[in-house]
Image (cartoon, rainbow, N blue to C red; front, side, top):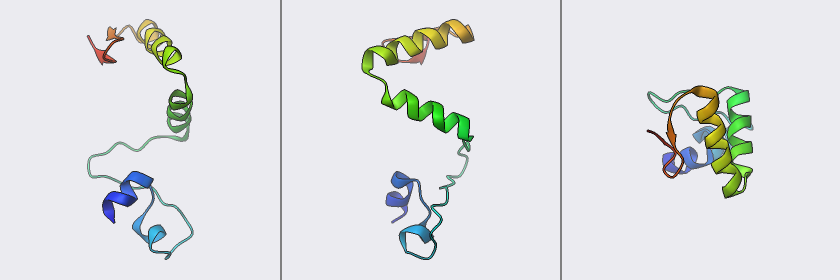
Length: 75
């Protein structure tokens, strides 16, 4: 059940019907995302593959961090 809650990003109480609030799964050592960061991730996931590549190129240009577009990892 924990794995299912993690995949769905809900609390176990929500899965068990003990609350109507989704709750956020907190993984030990995991960073909590802000609403803005979640919105960015949602928009990224909705992009076509070619636009995801353009995103990485733009991110590289804005951050000054070399990014290998083929692997999306720091160069």
